[in-house]
Structures are given as structure tokens and as C-alpha cells.
Image (cartoon, rainbow over all chains, first blue to last red; front, side, top):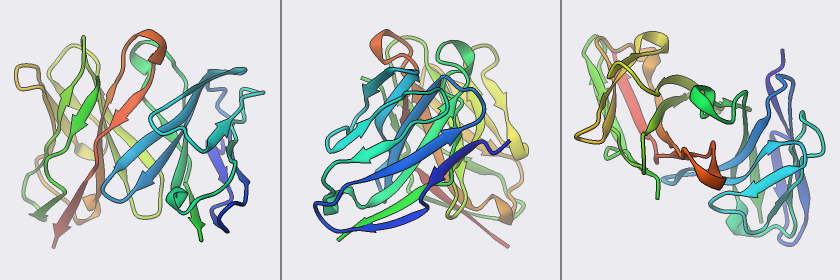
Length: 116
Length: 116
């Protein structure tokens, strides 16, 4: 199994450009999420999804869009990139939404984004 | 509101000595608590979790964590540190109810360095 796959691993954008970070998982997980990691800030939740067609906002959703058309894929779209969006982005999934398994996340390797 | 605090940005220990990485939490209701580890340029990996039951939880790579309800703490411990344990450690708490079911809140992380 590949687990959680993120592409691209590295990306440089100019201010105002748009792009999509891809995330795919092959574990049939219902729960998927996007985090950003910044030095001294830990991980902050951007958006999450509890199943195909269902998404919700996390702590820092502004400037990002998501959709969940299939169980496997959960792309993150930056609409108009800003330098404040320079960060490392992680996609994570879980086999359980409720109960004792919820919160046990499987992470991708990360996507490092620089906005100039 | 749910929150996690990791009071130490950095912990340094000698190989073979016991290590402790501290975590305190705030959550309404019963807490679901987690520890994750991140090696350089990698995604986070699940280490262990507390849901209910014994206050001492055992996890991967010889790590364990002690849940203390009265002190609202969930400290990560290992009896004998290895150089290979050097990494960034994150404590996390799960939001257990309502419309945010399944959301995970992370601390800012503690950098553990084990020297030979």
C-alpha cells in the first residue's frame, strides 16, 4: 500500500498565482484533512472531510478551498497565493471518524510551498 | 475550547538516560490524547494514544505516556533514550463531539535531542 500520497513535494509560486496540492490515499479512509506546519506554531488544521461530498473548515481556512468527490482524493486549492501561505502542508487520513480509532492519523510526506 | 500545551520547545538528554516530554491539555468532556513523532523532512507518525482505561499507555519504539486527570497532563516517557529518538514530538487532543467530531488539535511540538 502507498498510504497517503501528496504531490508536488516542492512548489514555488508568485503572489497571486493559484495552484492545487494533491492528496490521495489507498486505505479506504473516510476521514481526510489538511494541515499546515509553521515553525513554532505546530500543526494547524485547514480543512477536513468526513466522507465524499462532505467538507468543513478547520482553524485556518481562509485562502484555501477543498472538495471531496471521491473517498480517495482530497485536493487543496490555493485561490490566490500570498507570502503568508508559505508553509509545509500535510495531508492526513484516518480509518475512523468516531470511537477509539478517530484521531489516529496517517500522514503524507508533506508539500513544501514557497510564495514569493 | 480544546487546546494542548507543550511547555518545552526543546529537551536534551544523554543516551541511556530516561526522557520525559511534557504535555498538558484542556478539553470539555473526556479527553482522547495522542503523541506523534516527526523525523526530519518526513510526515508525522502515530506513537500512542489514551482513550480510556489504564493511565499508563505503551506505544511504539519503547515509548509510554502517563495520563493524569487531576493535573490534566499526558507526559511522554522512555526509560532509556537512544540517539535515534532525536526528533520533533507532538501532543494532540481530540475534540469529541458536535459538528467538529474527529478534529485533532496539536501542540507546538518539542524538539528532543539525545546526545551520545
